[in-house]
Length: 423
Image (cartoon, one colour):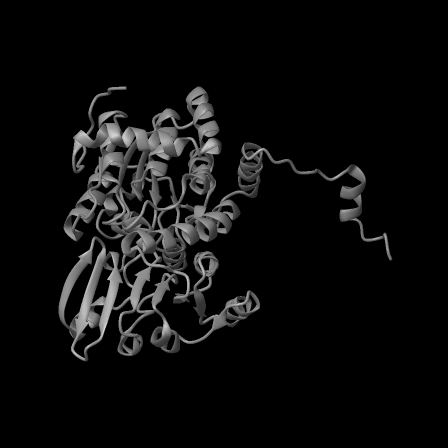
């Protein structure tokens, strides 16, 4: 389909046909979102709503944008990471679907924030964020636009943490739905999606044989759990580093060796960070890193590896393969960093498989619909995805997989609510 071309900044509109094929291929694995899109097209619950989205510009995200568009929304999209854009997808959304997209793979920092401001220039009424950069820019530099905004959604753990900090300080200016905290998001997207795609990114970038290597994971949240599981499945000797004693104990009970970052990095052939925090691989760790170690990050921002300190140790750097940079250090060691320390799954590979993003983006779509209906009733804080929406998405996903579950009988419901049954 050919539509009126909207304002945009993409790498090459000539890639649009290839992007359309990629979007259609992803749609085959996204039946829940497809059902929402069909309903949205009939009911138009988002008619006239301006949405500003700062998300990874992938084929899966494209299907979310199409569902919102078919629901009546006017959507503008920019990238939430300088390396995560699929240029053919961005081109297809502009050329074939009439959606404003501002995203180029490999864009520099100035271009990245220029694209965020291009989305903000559309005066969004709802924001969709993946890391809270859009919300932060809006609250710090574009405050004149805040009266237009009724609500927003946030996709990542890092972003939700930032937004909760804003709410605690009393500076958050509208309600946000924490899509990341939906059970159908973090239990599946974070664990199975990132677990698979982060390892995929490492393998695509390096062609590394995982079996027999010593691999370490920084963080045992849902993302870390998934990566650790997949690396062990590939045959890696897998170590886990944590600061939370309960998560560390869980990792130990799951059969992983739990140790400190300083110890792990001295032994690991591969170290993947997954914490959302800063300098997980900092000065002490980089001073002890094994010669030839490969460092990768699966957290949202490129803050988990202290690249500035690593550069200060280096006599030279060189690109060995796309997304593979070797730092030759003064003491003779060589350290390899993947994807500039950015999200390895989206920079060096394609990100999460569409089957898992089907649920996450169903959460996004239904959360926007919920905000359209209820935002004026909500306080300026971070809210969970309503449980009934979460459960409905899970129910629809099971049905799409051809699986069935039981329901409680009246007797069982009565028993579950009773305290009189005794032994």
